[in-house]
Image 1: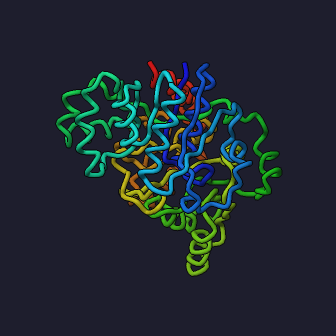
Image 2: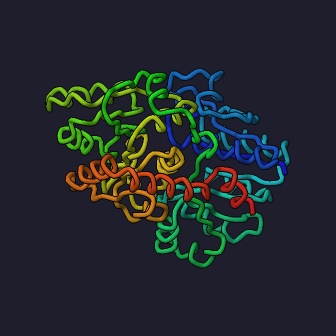
Image 3: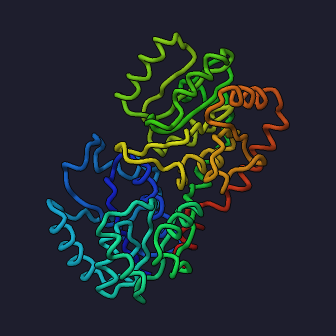
Length: 376
């Protein structure tokens, strides 16, 4: 089947949104579809110093697909060029992450699936969604959590009338890429993390709500551990290092940004992985709080790595996590986190069971499985 994927993501970039888009396109190709990714081409949107030529390695993409940038000096120019391109391509299916583009594709008669990651709509989207959801060419809405579906149904009557068109598909992971057989000690030497201490890792950005301050508080109480913070931009890292100096914390190491391609080895090298989301979680660009409906990529990557996970006990995370495959803690109670880390380091059998159960559970969330369900 000929599939066109429409996204507003800046590619290549450091955003989780761009990773998700690239992984889904690879999954569509893996299961046998011809896929073209359509993205906006406007230099002012790209704040990241990542060369276009490195886009595949940057995201750890093995199966390459066509990426078509569209000139978009204005929204009007973008939509005009998009219509022209899609009409010439004549796809069997349009998969869209842009609500207005979804509207245009459905009006033009192209069978379309729309994936949305937030219940916050622009006023124009609130007008057009009740129209497109009734049309035959509009096949379904894909959302990333049951919580997000519930919010949509509660806040929008037109969604409730067509709730059968809403599919819940959590985010995913490349299972095989995260199955690292290499010994932890050898991994640590390779990654220049050869510390003679237990290693507790965190991977991701350092935005507000990600729990970095909680990691600082925990680290002061666990001098027998080295805390490895993987990711973050240089500005945020420098600010955090300043706080470390003020608090006299000496057992935290920042790796800086690493390519998604290299992430599996870093996660596998850790003894424990932390996901200390606060009750309010900020996304890239400082926009909003996603803690009520999110489906973090790192959750699935952590689980696939085979390293024990300690996570904040948030309702939306319990759609995947449980006491069977992780340790869940109150994000406002540092003592629970300290107890959890010590439990995992002292009880090897318990830790092993947590890790095995997580790997077993995450097999349900491979990107290819998600892509098949989206098109089913």
